[in-house]
Image 1: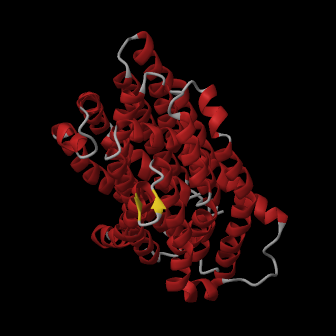
Image 2: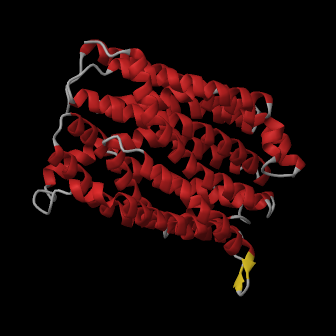
Image 3: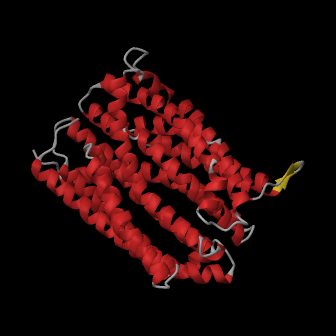
Length: 442
């Protein structure tokens, strides 16, 4: 029996809006950090940006590995298999614990790694200390991601969103005190911003446990069956391609930032401003993507038609991203001045922000289509496709236009436009293929 379109749109929006708020809550912390760093000057933005570009590839990878629980939880919940849902949740914590040591070690490698990548030498010491501060927030962030993954998979979106939005209440005063100092506390500048982020990430799982402990306790499977190597391996086999699917795009942006960093602090600061704005808009798409993963996975687990929901979520993302595209194209200078008053940085940012607007719609399509594919556990081919679109085609093209074509930072961004457009086309064709062929639950 076909799903009523109007009813399905209502269901998806009910799932999506709390997820969007949660995503925006996380991004709001980044925006506040950038705005407050801007008060310290463009070099502070570039320094934190360099540390962020080193930190985020690993952070996104381990978050992606944890999301191997997403298709298991969504499909098991749709099928009414409560114990399988709980086991996937419990195993998420084991996987998080296994990933913690390499994630922390990655952050300690920042000093010599950034030097090897030929970043501006004067920024590396503070950028490395910023990374070290971020490292201490990783344990709390991983626990929160496992908690959020379970709640999202069973359609409980609001608690994680409330907690992430609420963390901003701590971030602003912590930033002010740790960056500028207060009473007997000396200001740490850029490094203080890193410590503020780490403290906020440590608060997240405690707060989420407090408001959702009944949901967690009711699903906990007990000790028996959690540490089962084959099951852990299966969950990781889903999580690692999901991690690569998410990260290959993010890593391309990070690689673009590192290439731009070789051009000097001003281009890197302008890149970070444009990237911060683009990432903020992307949070809307990622919220809808989370709803797509949940809804499609639940329907597949219940052996119901899933493809109608898939295409509805993609259409919703297009509508949302049209708004951000319009703002980026027609208001670049206004947006740039929110971050900095430096004329040289603004001049570059005004060029890059409309380029971010150029890929908003295709970025929304590929983000939500990726969520659909995660919901039906089709994770390996999309990850491979992202390697081709971003690393074989988009990034080399961008580097060529930037360096050999003498376009500088805008050349890199045009390469990203190409990569995201090709990804959106590939993911959409893959969904259409699976729709025709049919999909079995994992």
